[in-house]
Figure (tube, one colour):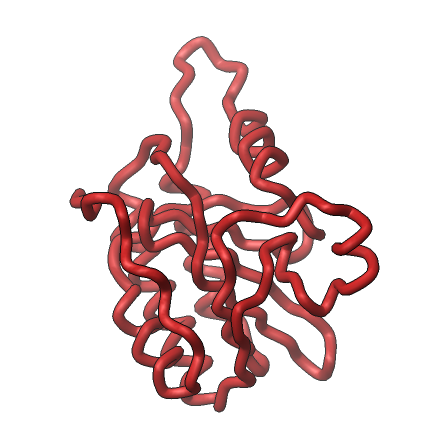
Length: 177
């Protein structure tokens, strides 16, 4: 289930259709993620992560609890159900707005991650980059890739409430749709 940035890029490129049109159906995949989040139930764990994945397989194998999909964990907190529901709603709403936009954006350097578990079983993992408004959704089957529009405020507010370290200030100009 763990993927490096290079593997995520290759996965994204492998999603290119073989059709002559070459049209990417980003909106469909983005809406599928939103629909999945609307039906997800369980306890949430919010992660503050470093944006650059760690490549040392030895470290990843020896201390997997220090990483979330190869990204070093800066902090984590078990969420109350109300906060989990708030973040899932914020993401779903953001994905529905983001489905109106498409394209390949620059960075994918996620600072936030969310895990949903039910009775000790992982239901879904999300890697979230609010810098370029992208999300990777890991559940059953292949990872899904979607686009966001908003939602950062909810994540940062909940992270602050749980004492998680804030995402570093962006060095990039904000992307506007």
